[in-house]
Length: 206
Image 1 (cartoon, helix red, strand yellow):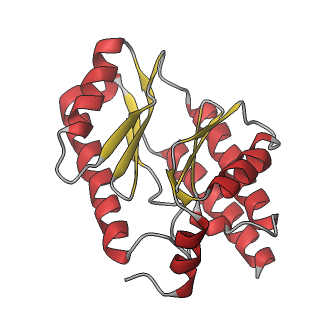
Image 2: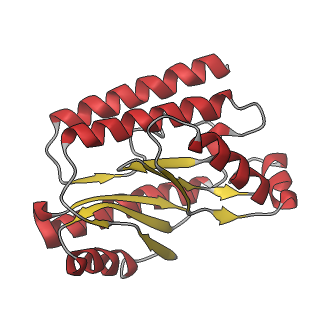
Image 3: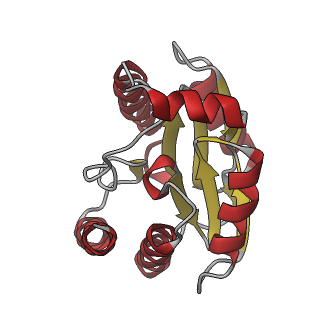
């Protein structure tokens, strides 16, 4: 089963790479391609649908407001929104953050947009390959629920989202920091207790 998950992770990354190279969109809704094979998630089904909706809506509003002068990826987990990518100046970065904060049903926003030149297709492809390596290594880790974590890699920085215990956070950071291509691990997760984790795995999500 783990071998099959590894192949699926690598295959999804290759598909995402092809799509990113062939498309010219300035914005990408985080997690749309990579979540197709996820069988285990610590969110309710309603929260998962809401997160997908937020990613699409916020991405669309940023694109309408700022066009192609920014490259922004929007990733939502349990209505907590992570903004990554690049903006040419601090004013545009703050504008992106305000758009996300003012969107309905958003609980909080992490604005990790870099004030720098827009990344190239090659750089974005390298990030996707690194993301695939991370997912494969998490699958290989026997003591982790690999599908419970949402991973986003931008300019070599690996962002980890999810509902994660303190033990898992340390272990996930250790695994990811050893992956080739990772410059830094950034935890933007929601911390849960061991008891809460046990309860999540004791009953199916609604």
